[in-house]
Length: 369
Image (cartoon, rainbow, N blue to C red):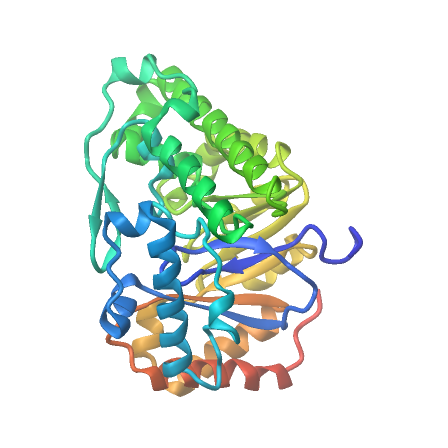
């Protein structure tokens, strides 16, 4: 692929049992590609997978559960083949390890694990003095990161290639887990302190990604991209994002060949102009309330994605679903539809109908910008 094609683009990627992240496009993506994702509770109910601490620390157990999860997907959605063709080609991988808590745990925030859910961070926030004392740690000496390195050794020994992705989150997301809601007041009354925190988080994310990617490269798995999650960006104004947070997103982007931004299912309108200025943006997602046509115009060479909420999937009529998907087709495509966090009580028939409606919209010509 050439740079003028899709070589810099990323698409939504949701591994079974893992939170959403992104992976490189391969050029075969449908103009209305759906990435389905199911909650751990869905898998716990359907095939008994236990997502407790062992799932996150034992790559052999996790690989066994991956086979079971892929089998359940194919049994419930045989026409969609969401679990893939060959279940036994499932390799040991890093997908979903510690959910969204890797960086928080590196800085000492404990995680709580559940049989039917992703892990959650304990609210043990850092004091002013602890933030002031922060620096990028020696990652191999940090217990949680050292254990990830051990997992990679096991994966290489058992399966050869170290596939998958840790979820590094974003600078503000990680700052919230380290500091709580106080991070917002810090921006106003202690900007030097909070910028020190942002700087340390940014450098740690970059160093951690490089370390993991280099270990994967030695097994033939080449990862060149970084993505960040701005799930709480809607809690700050676009001016605050531009002044206080965008420079850190830019630093992460500049450190890797390809880059994407997860904006979550919020209205992207206040931030999309700034996102579009961050180098060659390979991915950006948004909620249905966004001005989709404007996002497409500002990011014409970006793989765009619409985050469709599980509540809308479960509660809207089929006509309403089709109207939403038709609008996305006209105003945003080619794009992904990220249908994540489908819970155990959503009927399988609703998932199948959603896929059929999206396929039907391909007869609608997209608006050109």
